[in-house]
Structures are given as structure tokens and as C-alpha cells.
Length: 156
Image (tube, rainbow, N blue to C red; front, side):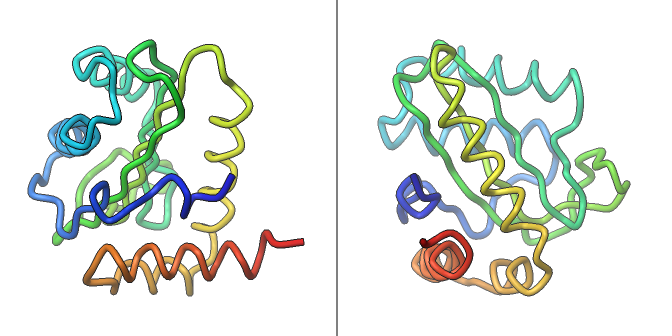
């Protein structure tokens, strides 16, 4: 399972409209809802916000990966967004965020959820890749960059 398989141009937003963490999460959940990726928008939103209350998903280096397991989805879904301005996500490195992956998986399917989180985390630790994503001005460029990076580092 590749990240480029989870994302399409409809679930990528550049730039995200909101500038506050919880509003950004809501905007990204709404992107998934508008594209018929969710069974229950409110359940997904509540689950992601609850996960965020437990501990920030700001992983550092300008990246956040809000995520949750939820009864509101049938399968693993994802959205991606880039902010115009720095956002305080209460990241572990205390630096602002601009690149945001939202990931929501069914409660009964832990494996794909963890694999996707791990893959996002591994890719986003590469500064060159983060820079390439941050400078992408279209969803097509984001998908192209992710597919290229995955091919480079995860193909057998």
C-alpha cells in the first residue's frame, strides 16, 4: 500500500484555508467527507480531535500527521494539505507546521493504519522531500513527488 494510492487530487488542498490546528483538522475531515470517503463525518472529526487532545500529532520539522482509528470509516483514508502560513500544532520540536497529512483507519484494521503512519513518518524525515512538498503548488505535483519518493525508497 502506497501513500500515492491513498491520495488523489480531490483530497489534497493547497493552500489550506484555516490557520488554527483544530480548524485545519476539521477542514481536512470535510475534504474527505465531500469526496465520499467517510461513513460518518462527525464521528471521524470527534475521533481525530480526541486523539489530538491526548498528544499532539505535530511530529516536528514542520510536519503534522493528525490521525485516528474510527468507526466513521470503512477503509483507510487520507488527505494532505499545505498551509500558507506557519501553524502552531504544539509539535514535539515546538516549531510551527505547514505540511499536514490526515490519516483515518477503521478500528478493526490496525496493520494498514500503522504501516501508513510509518511510511509518512519515514518519508517526512527527509528534508529534501519536505522542501519539495512545501514548494508544490498543485495536487498533481504533490502526488508526483510522493510517488517518486516512494519508488526511490520503498520499491523492491
